[in-house]
Amino acid sequence: MKLKSLVTGAIVGGIIGGVTVLLTTPSSGKVIRSSIKTETKEWSNLLKNIQEKALDVKTDVLRLISESKNAANVVQTQIRPSIEKWRHSIDPELEQFRQEMKEIQQQYKMLERSVYQK
Image (cartoon, rainbow, N blue to C red; front, side, top):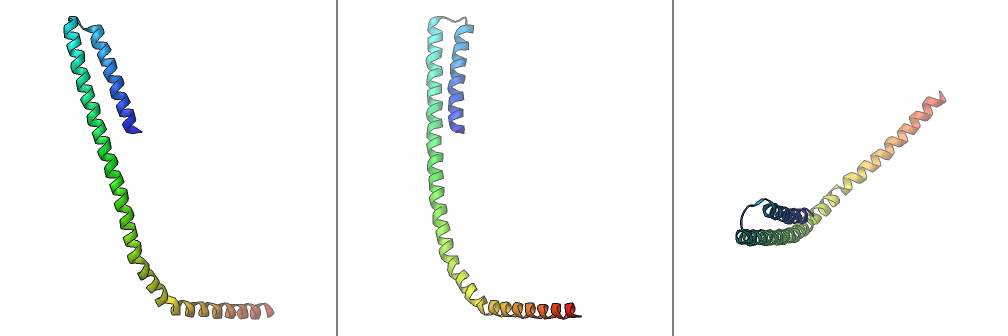
């Protein structure tokens, strides 16, 4: 979207500049026509350069997207086994923790009952 605005601005600016030159110059017709041809060639070259650079940017972005996807896949492939290994290594501790939490809850309920009974 920004590139489109830049190109549109360049074209409009060129047109306005050309009209301004035509209306304000005291030069002869040959000089004006030569100036217009020169300006037209310069603007054409500028637009071609902008187009080439835009295509380069597009190519670079597409390549970056592809490389990022590949890198993400590699990282995922390498990390997944580590995560699974970690999960399996903490399973016994996790189960023990759950058991201890159940015991604490039971003790809390017993304490609560004893306090309310008194």
